[in-house]
Image 1 (cartoon, one colour):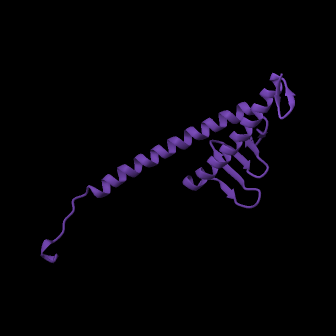
Image 2: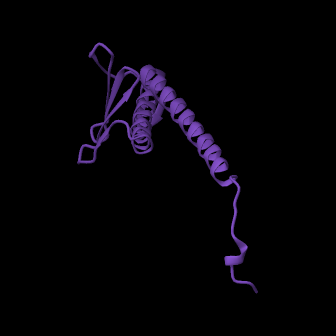
Length: 135
């Protein structure tokens, strides 16, 4: 038994508390990542009211996240809703997949931007020198 704030907790209670904390942190990270993805990709919907609701399509699924109530729902391709509020395994997997796709998107955009910049700025540059003021 371990004591925390004067209360005694067994190993199973401690594990439940740790998993609950991790679940809350991951749902927060998913919510913030979805906000960034909506801004970067212009995909999805962000309702910036008091509830801070997000709908984001990924594959044939839609992720709903409510920042205020810390709710997370996945609607699959058949239209069936799956509440992920207590499913740590699914939330971990969802976060990993979103993060992986966000990193892939960032890499592609950065690489494309560099290629575009090189393409634009490496073009020959000609100035008629007779039109320039001489020193």
